[in-house]
Length: 188
Image (cartoon, rainbow, N blue to C red; front, top):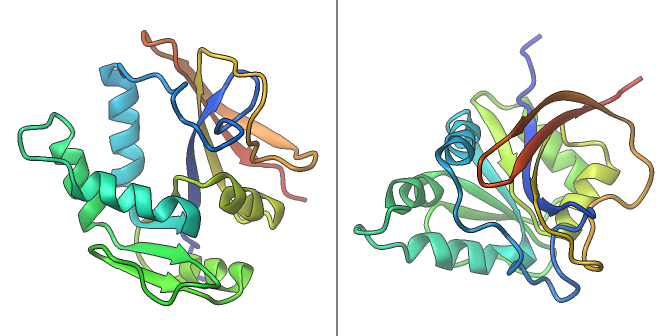
């Protein structure tokens, strides 16, 4: 039996548990990331060869990374984001502008399990709140990497809808104030 690929979540979160403001704002995110945090992001990217995206965040994600210029310190990482195959889940769109992007309109659980069953490195998901919520609800995420930013915003979007038992597999505090907590789901 081939081992299944893991679906890993990488998400920025406030200390009060929000992944975005009420209108999806991300202006609370820590911008001056230190090398440790960046190295962790690169490591998560390097161990994955597929990116899953919810439809709502796709447009901004693709425009942002494809727009990074060679003189930018983010350029090396941006190339990875552009070159890595991306699977966008959407019931409404049939195609999305961008390099290495395909749209998947099939049933979420079936499609994700199909992707996990393919050969290759792990799969990484960066968000949208609604999309990640659905993945968590269906117990499809195998590793949660939560980048807790040293800020509270009081209200906003969450990814956890119900109670969820998790096992902590690591926690590291970085000079920027970000704490990266890693969890895996407790499965019977």
